[in-house]
Every structure is written in structure tokens, then in C-alpha cells.
Length: 107
Image (cartoon, rainbow, N blue to C red; front, side):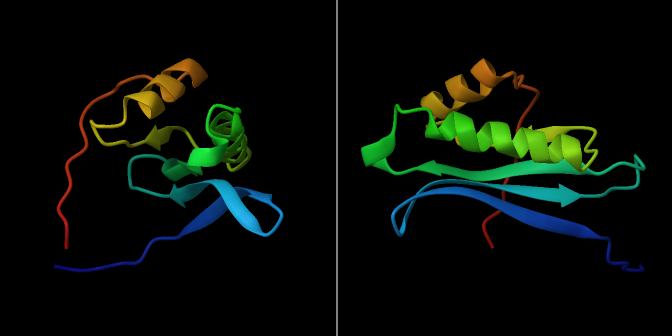
């Protein structure tokens, strides 16, 4: 068995109210052996409870989509727990499709 590191990077998109971070999302740009272009992983979308319903989640996710396109990603994957129907609704509204399942192992 051989191991080879592949390139990738992470980008944090966030909105602050004064010094407090009130909304955020991460874009991880990753490569695999299937495509020349990278793919994007949208992770840790968060909006402070006091600021929900004001469009901040949509703003940070749309910025991640813009950055994924700018970085020539061929796809963008968004994951979410089953218990988060509001974020699922947001993802569908923005244009994501329910494509499959996510499997996880806590380490």
C-alpha cells in the first residue's frame, strides 16, 4: 500500500456583528482521481439563533457557491444531519438536490 498527499484548501466565509461572528460556512476544495477539476465540500453552516430568519445563511451559502465556481469545482456537496429540516429546506431552495446518503464514523 502506498500513500500520496493530494492538494486541497479550505475557505471560511463569515459575517460579523461588531466583534461577534453571527454566520459562517466553510468551503473545502478537494481533489480525487476521477476528475481534473476539484470538487467542493460545504461544511459547518451556522447562523446565531438571534439572527436566524434574516437571510444570513442564504448569503454565506451563496458566497460558498460563488467561490466553488470561481475555483472551477465540478460539484459542490452539502451535508447535514437528518434532524436539521430547516437547513435541508434552505439547500433545496438554493438549488441543491438530495443526492444520496452520508456515512460517518466518529473517531
